[in-house]
Length: 388
Image 1 (tube, rainbow, N blue to C red):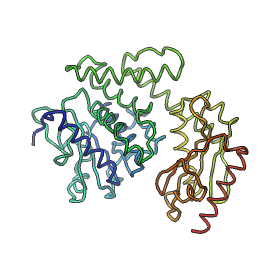
Image 2: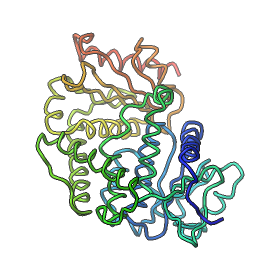
Image 3: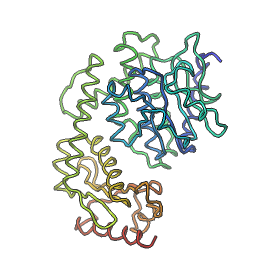
């Protein structure tokens, strides 16, 4: 069936709500783009994957390894957000119940489409689609009702529209303990796709396209200004976006190394606990979005290193909140302990997550002795591990 624009905003919102329902209820997602992808294709997969990390679901991006050198900074975002990138057809497993096609005019243009066809044809697999191509020879890839295919400046614009809708779903936000949706990495990915497909807005046609372009570009620039405390200037080319992505990846690696300086191991737990004095220089050097991203990434790596459980803790900046942030992650090879039991065992009320990863927060005023506080968490977790 040929692709046509969505007839009205009401129908578009219905489709977006179906996508969000699937993000809540489905368990495993495979993101696929077209052969020889451009910035919008890869950025849209990365942006949607960043949204999916909020739901703690299994996910992976398919990107032919031959193209990896063209998108090092977008792949860096995947790395630090624990988004799996599949580079060869042999790595594609059958362990997915949802396939999402991005920015691809027709099925035969999908990357590794011959290898994906058996998976996409299964009756238990839902195929979804996000695309802005409405050419005469375009054909739908997604199942009926799961086609967010409409006139837009880029596929990333459509994902931005979905994110704005998700932000209004307060019940979903509470259910999954979702913090900020429009993180720096997410906005940067959206802007990368829009800029790449419109040549810095030169090819924008409708007032709607221009409105979304202005919204996300201004949001991006506000983030840069907020981070540097000075006018960073509007980006003027795709090269400026790529430079910012490169800078981001360098900062993330540097922040990760600063976290690792404080790594410790106690039996079945690998952990990093930064007291207020240790956290201060990190807060001075890095944006909070980078710190939170790297903390999650570090927790994931420490969990696999320990083969059981990891803990990462740090203080929020005083001007932001009076909280100590903590995150625990379970190794993929260790299934016995539901980490939500740790929160209950410690009597912590401000936190949540799922059985393999939890985040929780404690007011700094309630912690008189930080090392003793961390010891209580470590010892309590070890007890639960030993019981299981």
